Amino acid sequence: MRYAAIDIGSNAVRLLIADIIENKGSVSFKKNTLIRVPLRLGDDAFLDHHISERKTAELLKTMQAFSNLMEVYKVTDYLAFATSAMREAKNGNEVVKRIKESADLNIEIIEGQKEAGIIYASHIEQNIDKSKNYLYIDVGGGSTELSMFSAGELWASKSFNIGTIRMLDNQDTEETWNEMKDFIRDNTRQFKLISGIGTGGNINKLYKLSEEKDKAPLSFGKLKSLYNYLSSFSLKDRINVLGLNQDRADVIIPACEVYMTVMKCANIKNIYVPTAGLVDGIIQTLIEKNFNNAG
Image 1: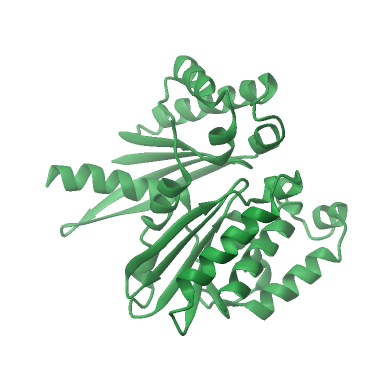
Image 2: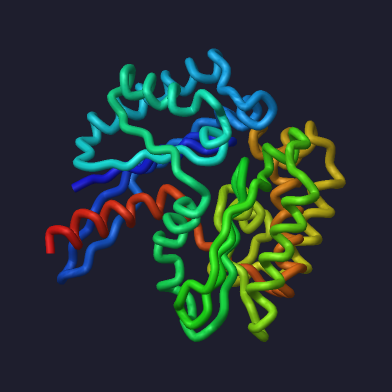
């Protein structure tokens, strides 16, 4: 059995095809194929509040390709979600309708709160010490989702319009930054020690660059050193010398700034980086929907 997850984000569009494994009553998944297309819908959405005809055409072609791949892979169920860029675009619903007509895919534009819920549905916390306190930090192109966990229970969760594409386009506001800092202080001050859990393509890349041993957390100091190191290169050199993809080389700097701001504000000294994100959470959501309903 195979499931598929589609994430239409502000920076990239992703398709994850996963094999579903049933073993002695438990159900898990193994990633089969992950495809990422850097469409940058956020550039249109945050500046013009409208997805242009050119970007819409690119998105339609991508969705048609995803639909064809899902058919070839014999996918039995899927969910497709669009996040911050499509939330903000006034023609988001119209684009969704056109995707349905041309690629026969049902896309749901989800609010930040639901996005945060799906991200932590990826069951990252199963590999984490439940007796401790954690702040999930997911930094995307258009928004940052924060979720505070204590003793395995969700304490508070909120989405903020702070993201890497939004920052590059100067569409983030001081008011939103202050709102995020207030949320962090209000929901972390009662806890003595908090560790971070970072998700998203940028923190995964930063973790690889840090050359930390597998599963060891990334310290605030190491993250700051990485930020200073990356910032010392021009955008061109981050691509040519460091070998970063073009669509990663610019967003990695603002992403660093968000992670460091959140960690500093919550007094977090270490951040764990499991390679999981929205698409993993979507597959987990499908498993729970199909197997819990079946049971």
